[in-house]
Length: 448
Image 1 (cartoon, rainbow, N blue to C red):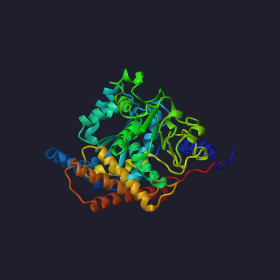
Image 2 (image 1 turned 45 degrees about the vertical axis):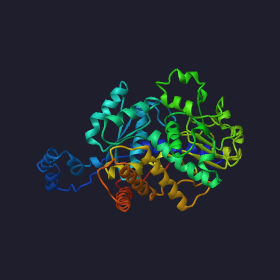
Image 3 (image 1 turned 60 degrees about the vertical axis):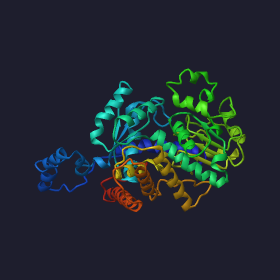
Image 4 (image 1 turned 180 degrees about the horizontal axis):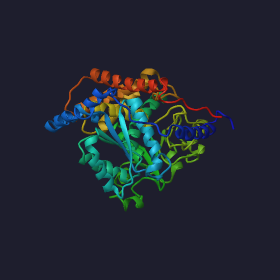
């Protein structure tokens, strides 16, 4: 097989990932952020000096944000029930993903993140666990929790807790999809309000994507969603009988698909300008002949992980003009990693009480604007993860939106927020480089 073939590259990448995960035995560790060289240092940071810090917090509980790292520490909480495209693999198998998430939080957002993979007996125990952990964290990122319970858990925790709760599979994915779609449509010259969109998969990501797309001005009637039972419309008795449990899906049934398209993926794609697929790992979930039935200048986001619903070369050969996936080793990565580090940096810097759709829309606009300023191409509709300057801008945009919505006690300028976010992210990136340069982190072993 050709070494440049994406299928061959994917297989090689998987082998390399297993080898290096075993070598490093994890991706994150706890490191000091204060001098700890000799006994006088320890006397300040621990007993007896630390007692004064604790007393200050007793006298004024808000001092915890100044006296500790709580304001820069978040929890990544998962039960391992919907990890990537692997499904319900459990908390232990989900831990490498959560550690990877923590690594991205640090080097891209300057945020200290603690992976917490749980095995709750039920949803209530998971929510209770997150609630009792609240005093140690400035925010919580929910990750890889199966739907529909991920919707219930997010909504309930946002009501119970007074720190931001975010479900990245929902809100993060939706933010990046909207930014990517904005720029892709600019390249093909189609107005956002005039396109027909096929959404393949109606799980956490596309449900949140539907909500954010319609909030941005897209007419729900022009969207045709499709899950494993077929296209969504008011005639879906299987969803109508469970509408209390699946209220988000049933709402999509009632609001979207004005033409009452019936069938499966092939029918949903016929004549569509845009395919947003966040469904089961491929390949061959979406077939080339279905892409050929889409409108001219078609846009295809095949974002299943770890293997897209259709390989990009096959989609382009079938007539798609712009193709994106979730993979970092292929052009046009549409991945929530472009959103969550900056968004959390922003909410922590202004101590926002929650993360709203309005804040996500602001982040999406900033992502899209950054890519436009750099220059759009069919294979570059978004920034890449190594264009680190995008993250402080997303942070500042998110923080400004939080202030505008009255969700923070602070009132700061965009310039000061951008400066602070840039400084913190640059420091985290420099630390990562220095640890390698100084030999604290060993270089990867060569393959023998």
